[in-house]
Image (cartoon, rainbow, N blue to C red; front, side, top):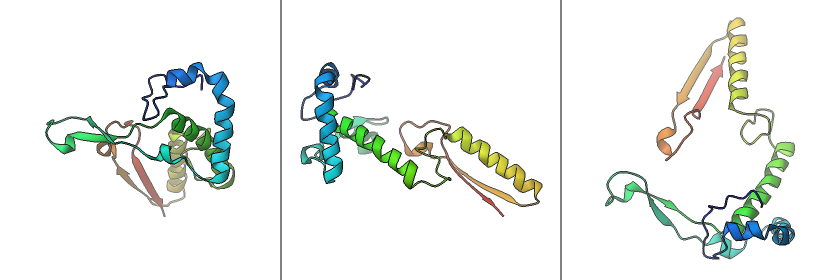
Amino acid sequence: MKSWNESTATDNDKISAISLKDLSDCVALPLTREVRRLISEGCWPSIWKFHLIVPIFKRGAAFKPGSYRGVHPTTVLSKLAGKLSGAQLVLFLQNNVFGENQWAFSTGLGCRDLVTMLVMAWVLATRLGRQVGGYLSDISGAFDRVNWNSCSLSFIIT
């Protein structure tokens, strides 16, 4: 909680990230207990499920609805609970569910590792006389802000 971003917006509970950061020594243990209870019971507080959609201007003409994107401010407590439960979920998935071909959300494996593995597979395939086919797709137009290093990538080795 001490490393939480102070500029995080507040929602209908009006609890700011700065307040939680200042009170982190007092709030950390009760919040951790609450998150563990939420995970064990499999329920999420209904107040944290309710969101008001706020339009944020992107670009273009201000009078066109397509020039806006909907954003829903989330309570800081909900964000913290989601982060805590998400960390436990990802750890469980890494240890029990994800196979060896899972690269997203895997500690120590990134897109550079995947590209290196793919290039080595292509080199091996061509050395063995196999055909290598590829399909690249740019998804940058689908989002407001995208890391240009991210694109959909599929290859078939026969």
